[in-house]
Amino acid sequence: MTTSRLALAGEPLPTVGHARAYVCGITPYDTTHLGHAATFVWADVATRVLRRVGVSVEVCRNVTDVDDVLDAAAERAGSRFDSFAAVGQFRFDRDMAALNVRPPAHEPRAHNHVDDVVRLAAGLLERGVAYERDGEVLLRAAAVGLAAPVPDDGSSQVPPSDRAEDPADPTVWRPALPGEAAWPSPWGDGRPGWHAECAAMALSALGPAVDLHVGGADLRHPHHTAMGAMAEAMTGVRPFARARLHVGTVQVDGAKMAKSAGNLVLVSDLLESWPAAAVRLLVLDRPWAQAWDVHPADVTAAADRLERLFSAAGRHVDGVAAADAVVGALLDDLDVPAALAVAETEGGEAARVALSVLGLT
Image (tube, rainbow, N blue to C red; front, top):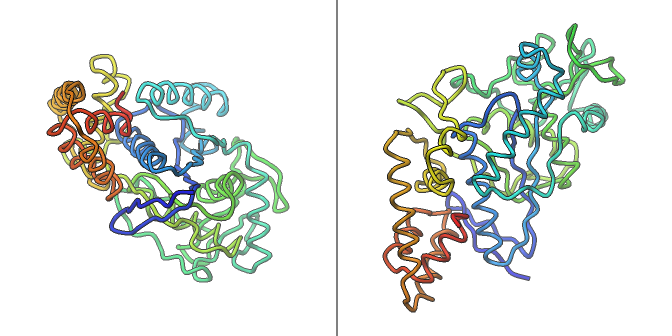
């Protein structure tokens, strides 16, 4: 068994032989854009680095196919929510395969885990950390040390329930509105809360805790904190996540890339004109937590650097120490720029290791 030396944000993540990673996946109602891709490419690199040092990694990446936004998009398209989500999932999977993102071991879909959310809600009620109001079950934030969300750009916020005792209390289960898909529960027909969906899927696939929790920076709070609080309150195991990888936001002219902003850079569009490895390198050649603006010239620069790396990989040099330096840089907070600098300068085995571990081949 091998002990990993990976450190994230200055904190070591020691593991012995095996690690579990939960990656917050997509809500499959639209085409994959570069902001989505950044999260999943970085998650893939983190797992590749761990595997490089002998740690097997079990990845769970969920699909949020029970969601108000998805329902609205499906209704506009004149489709059932599940059929509409399946099409979106197919397109997402195609983009991930093109970007060389390895498929996860588990890919739970929220609609298959509604019963698990019901069990989660019942368990939280039994433990006295949740309450029920008019068919809605809410986690009592004060009982689990959960702070109220701080307003940001609104992208990851869920409006407080009218039934909540405290605006910080997140919904575990709620009654369905007329026309919404609904499932039976002890509190009446209803639907899971968003945070509860992820908590239930993570607990079902990976057990009471994970080593690495991955998602976009906008999911840090309240989604990941509420999800973790629900899991911890249910199981008594703390912390739910030993480390978190909150990937920096991709922006256009300083504004977060989002459908509502009309500023999407679609992965499928980029792949029509550029090698997939260049698009992947575009995402990776920077600190993972850093928000960044994408510019048209950036992908050209990424393609040029990729060409230099392949040329460097073809050089015949004795590069064992340099290859170790590449891996060392990646273990030190996934420092891709430092790893690439060594690879490009030293060439040979160092460049080949960098291309392999970063998934660029």
